[in-house]
Image 1: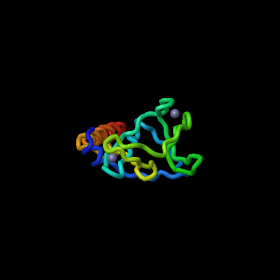
Image 2 (image 1 turned 120 degrees about the vertical axis):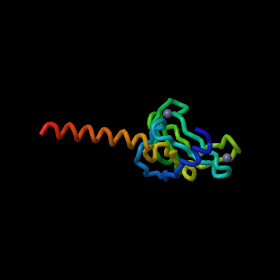
Image 3 (image 1 turned 30 degrees about the vertical axis):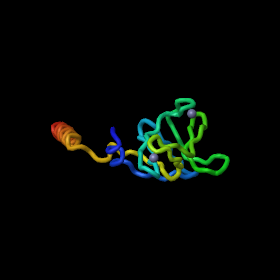
Image 4 (image 1 turned 90 degrees about the vertical axis):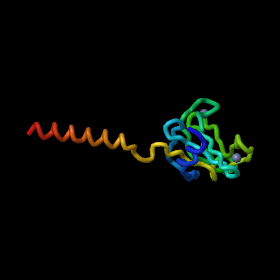
Length: 125
Ligand SMILES: [Zn+2]
Ligand SMILES: [Zn+2]
């Protein structure tokens, strides 16, 4: 997926100290958008323990960030690979909604399955 696609599907999400939802790095397409140049960076697993689940929280200074649920490594800021700007997680966090919306093929498959199920139910009467 290139930057154009990432930018198109990026949605800002709130991170707060009381975010109770867990974020699966690989399943949820966790990303952050640079405040200066708009470059989208996809998050990977924890660099410390390869943990895949992050959760919103605050560090000892009260800064909001994302923390590995496995080893508690926290990220409150990240540096943009493109322009070097220092970004806060709180202000730049989001998600790339790759599967936001069903493709026409998926809709056809679902309709066909529904017809087969209904037909088999009717034939049992
Ligand atoms: Zn940047
Ligand atoms: Zn970790």
